[in-house]
Image 1 (cartoon, one colour):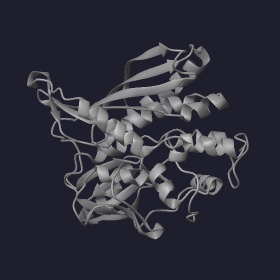
Image 2: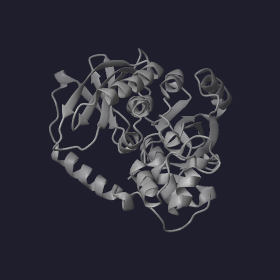
Image 3: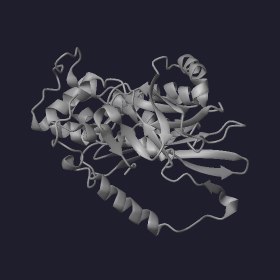
Image 4: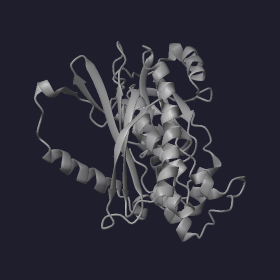
Length: 350
């Protein structure tokens, strides 16, 4: 996959990351209230995947996310089950990234009008995701708001807990010499679809036909649901040699910097990305820099482990459902994330 130089970008499709970061900073600067201790004690984990709060003797993890504009592709194709599964995956994977065990999820649907068939299909997908994550559906909210949305918008909030004796896995124990193990993604998951859809529209790509070298229609391939990593994380979270987890969602490999700002993550063994990423890169003449900061590039979840326990960690991963985990790099002194083979260096997440 070559670096094509200037080409399509996420910002050019309408998602300006620096602008989002600026707006978010403005929001957070305005929220100054701190709840009294009797309402729980928030645990500082700035920039992490889930919010953490201590209530009595228990620590709870909470996260929220949406499927984003992948729902527009689902609407175009009239297929809703996959994004139903996605809305579970994008949330429970963030719980897994702090080592929390899944407990429950509430969904949110915004729509211009209720569509029983679409809702039924979304429900089937949610059911599949909940089964994979061993997570309960606790309820949800459906808002019919035709003056706000023109199609279905799908999100959720998930809650997790830490079994007795387990502490949150925040990445604080990461140190130079650790090994990075990558667990493959099932596809693009649910990130970067504003850019994907722009490329499809601009180049009049037929979603009903397979891309070159593929067997499935492109639309079906793009809708492949997010792989769920909760069992993998649960199997390793109590191990002393497990120093960090990362869910490679929006932001690509830059997500690793959320674990520890005082080390460098060197991705010098990154496997060849699946062909779908090469197809998109070629279609939009997208640079390697943009690809690795927008998409997961074939790795959906990363585990940071002590070198001396690498073999045992891989055995446990295999038993937990990830026999396909592979070494993708190491931790060194320094800062940021580098992909040496591509000549890429990222200083931070935003």
